[in-house]
Amino acid sequence: MSGNVLETSGLGKRYGSKWALRDCDLAVPAGRVIALVGPNGAGKTTLLRLTTGLLRPTEGTVTVFGSPARTDSPESLAQIGFVAQDHPLYRRFRVRDLLRMGRALNLHWDQDLAEQRLASLDIPLGQRTGSLSGGQNAQVALTIALAKRPKLLVLDEPVADLDPLARRTFLQTLMAAVADDDLTVLLSSHILAELERVCDYLIVLTGGHIQIAGEIDDLLSAHRQLTGPADGP
Ligand code: ATP
Image (tube, rainbow, N blue to C red; front, side, top):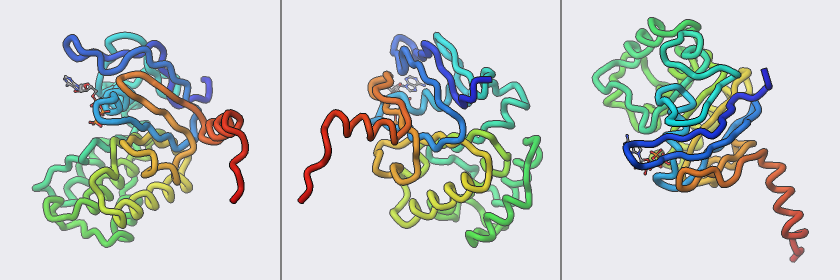
């Protein structure tokens, strides 16, 4: 295996006659927090869903830890945690019911981890998700994804609709999980500023094409070489 978490080659996805993603070549090393940034319609959700195996490519290939991501393979499913955009939890269910479903469906489910995380966030197991705030729902979705003990955690615009305090708390929980576990994180946003404090690898996507991909430190040093040292005051 190459040590890359995600590799794509000539990856493309077409919906009807419209290409949402085209000519996508990536080799992203494991162990990073990867920000996937681009405007509305750039193809971010499409790339994330191809990575999780929820979508099949129209052309090219995508592999995660060296194997094609497949939703019909328990091993492939077990290594990826996915938090969809707007984390659409079933609003009539209690938090406890969602944990029960998680336990029934996942090979490496860690119930203690899930209950401890929710207790530390003061989210009662008996509460219906429909009565939780947006920030609490985001935390429940993250907790469920982490309780799978994934090797790759994929989050589609997880902080887009959160207020600044909920956004900060969510990113802190995420960074604590990254520090504790051997975890690679791939998360998307419209706005780099939302994620720049937490990510160390950047992919910029516009119009279905990769514009930039690389370690943040390498990109910054390339930028400095092009622009010269900043003038002092
Ligand atoms: P946003 O930030 O608005 O969620 P995005 O960067 O995630 O956008 P995608 O959702 O991947 O972008 O969409 C890329 C393009 O593909 C858009 O033009 C979108 O309208 C189109 N598209 C996405 N899903 C479908 C679908 N199921 N059927 C037809 N077109 C689609």
